[in-house]
Length: 288
Image 1 (cartoon, rainbow, N blue to C red):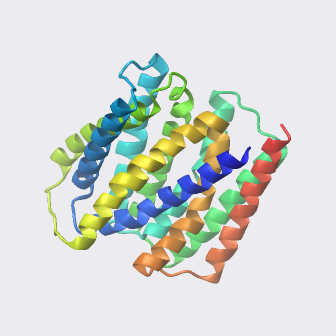
Image 2: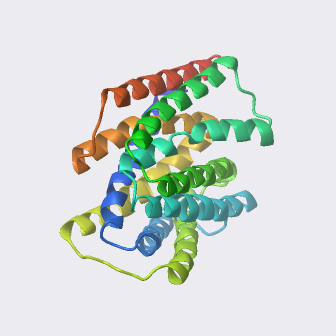
């Protein structure tokens, strides 16, 4: 893995993790599915306009169209939709920690479905990362975390696994920003339908809601997704997915700073184990 990929991965993890805190602010003041649908609609339009400005077109390959719809449904509608609903009752830090278990799911699915090979050191690293995640998550559960919210986040992580593996063909024909924009429109439509049938739209307008909505639309929405597509195309889904192990540290830290959510010694121990897992995975990949 080269230095550029590492920088991209860390930048992605920072942007991605910050979305949990901004989402927590949004769902406390607005209907989760409706607000997320609007966010994706705006992000998608901006993404498509940027793509046209860059000279990109709607002429996507078959794999790109497939990835666009799968990514739009499984990441945007299911993963983020379930997390937005869950964060009405659980902390942003817990949601980010659960999401970071996704790389183990990706590695397992890659091995079963795509016959990807995992070096022994990589397997040890992934297991270590999952142990670290479990340690932090166990601490939150002992503090009385909502089980339904937890279940929704776990289901979301499974959906994110499918989305991550679907990106394999998303960059092969160029037009990456167009793919980013279109998959957001797919998510916006799916979430809009879900909101219509399940929600009574409620909004408490405030400066914090507006700032959180604008931020999550532009940074985790557009910038992070674009970086993610490029990163997966550069190093592959399994290697890229290991950067999700940084989510507990960044997610807990950002939530602690901006929302006042508590951090304990065990949080730091868990983060240390997770970091060691990332190092093991990357070292194993550098030998292959």
